[in-house]
Image (cartoon, rainbow, N blue to C red; front, side, top):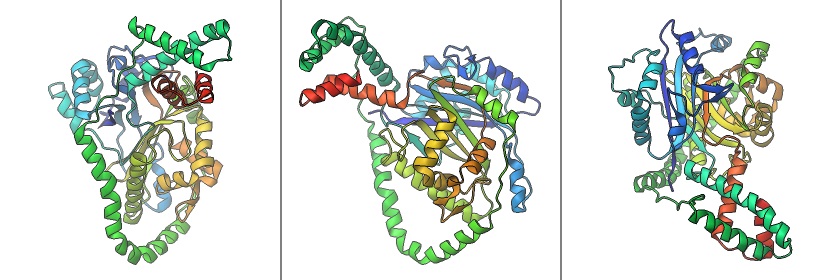
Length: 433
């Protein structure tokens, strides 16, 4: 199994270069909201391990909200973020990126402070990479190659199945399955279909992942006596802050909503970015970091087989602390419309939204972290839209395929490789096709 990794290269944009940078990035798109896989700057389609990628200009468009807490606006210079999700090791991938897209990336990063074409591009990208505080992968180990091969298998079977049903009828599912398997073998022999075996899991990753899986709960267990002592003080302080947090019920401007909506629904999937200030105070920051620690743990070890709590539509998501832990950035790739994405979270995982975002300025006030918050639906929707940023460039390696499609295609492949137990199981498999 090849695990997935992330990169997020961030650098402030030079004064006076913002519009020039936007124009350059716009030239990487083949149509509104969708990158050209063969664009000359960063030919995303040439990178066989790359699932998703985007360029975002991060601006503090809600920076004045902190004034409601009696604080001055925190300075923030617009920054360019280049982020992606891919198969395998980060340094290996960034090395490939630097070798195959060096000239294009140099043109892009030349608009950023602290960059020169004289620098070693790989070293510069590694230095400017930011690790996520929490990261979610829809299906750990599902590679881009696997996605494409299984999609081709599904197409092959779905085109051939009606032919044999027309010839033989539906009465004998075992015969239908055998015909399909023979067709698959013929296509593989002709070089028209390929089903690669799973790659071995890197030993170093297995060790790190195993230590993390055991180590985090072990440390929490060892600290549990301290947590019990601090619990009353924590509860008191939490409720004091929750009751005193200012309510910011601010409607996003029509122009902002229209600009975001213009880029959405150009594929079955969409991109999502939000950026904002963390509520002031050490308590809020430590609480946020602790909740992110738990979020990352369950995303890595529990919700890594197609679901984030009860939500199936998210391909990748990450939470990132920025600006010396004073601000936070969230990015995701999801299926369906923006409205359905928000409704899914509110109705199925509102408590998770509260845990992940209640320490951000502008989020609807919560009760004991997990209560209320996102239940105030309209206020929540206003807040996330106000903090949302567009992607200047967004790439997806498998357009027109949802996370549910990917899971179905994997089940179809499994049905090819493993014999079903009975006729009903075969019929269920044929129904998937």
